[in-house]
Image 1 (cartoon, rainbow, N blue to C red):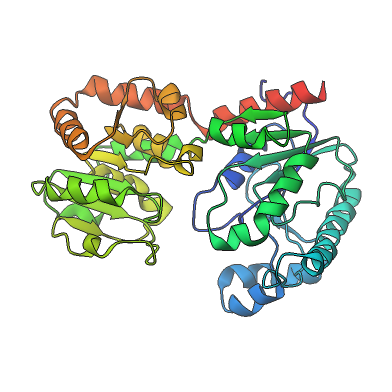
Image 2: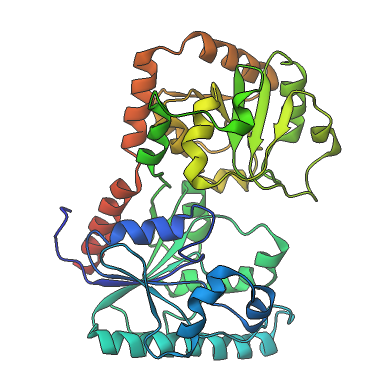
Length: 400
């Protein structure tokens, strides 16, 4: 679909807030779809508990006055993208799964839907598409509205205890109720296809133009890695249960000639003790998204060392195309076969620490200008704008 083609308005129930510190599939999808139509992005609603916990945070102060206004819309700064703030909801997650929880959840969901309905009436919107983007905590909001198409966007498996407590029941509901389920991996399509045959595969993407800034000759390497021993082997993302720690211990131990840098928040409860005793491993914490190109410029090779299991098979990491957009060699474990289709021959996939070591050595020796250009070219086919075109075509087809 070409820009300017007609699409109905889209009401987008997101899983995150629009000004959150992390890149997200939810908001990037909504932002890209705003090229084609008006998008109303409903942030993940605050609860009363959230108000107390985050009362001193600037992002809450920015929204405070809107909690009490009928027209609770924030300016996103992006054409056609309006941010809707929902008044605070009851805090009910502590309740056990059962009739009492579902009763109060219904109260919360009717509050969300009622607020959206009033705003859409004021905006003169009667024909619209509703997308629930991985906000399975509120599965029935689409039922309480009257969209011309209901879509559920599934971007991950439910893993954490917080998500699974009520999410297993809730996600099954939203999957069954949707006209279409869009998944970011084929494994998710297989799993959700057991409850709804109308599934569609739409992989994640990246803001490639941002990571491409690392190719600018005048850009400085980020201070925190500038003085480390070269070459630097890097990873960006959460340091949590998906990483293959057994493989990493062998890989880092047998390659003392390299410095390994892992940038991202640490899930302390799942990280093994050995990871803090490696002299050539540097855990530098989360890096602001604006600083991503400077960090990537300091990396010689980028890693995605995920475990190969049922959970990782559902993952299509955003970092993959960010790495490639910076022109960096990428080595990944074979955790998701979907990745190879979208990376052609520019990413090396391995099984063992020995194969990983050999791949690093080859990548350092064979990193020509043509190789860099090939990686960037592949990344450019996997931007959020490219995904938005596919979304627009898919919605048009389903409405047709």
